[in-house]
Length: 127
Image (cartoon, rainbow, N blue to C red; front, side, top):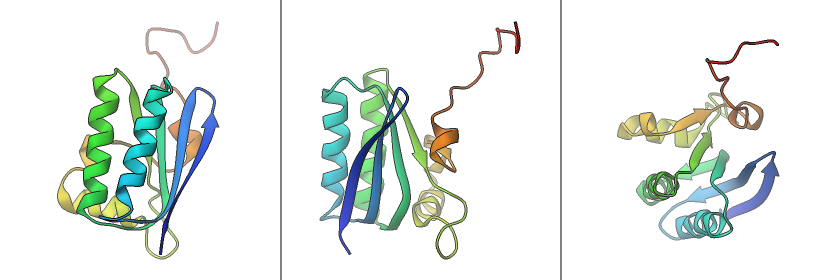
């Protein structure tokens, strides 16, 4: 299986929709697309990994590097990793959990929740 990465936008967020396999051969494509987004001035990035069917240590390395890059430019990175997938949940979610690095990421189940800003607790809910 190959890897596909599609660009999208959702409000202020740049979205990279990734599908296929993230391995030693294909992971550099994701890394480059993240770098391209930052070079284009994007500081709010969502990686939609819901359709990633396989991820090895190279793919995890790319995700950690993306997190580091976004933090270095005062940006934000969020991952979409649904709890329920085509068969038994997100493969990437299980891999990140098994490696103990899941806690490093802001993880959301879908695009809508990933791109909603958290409410500022200092502001009232209604005016």
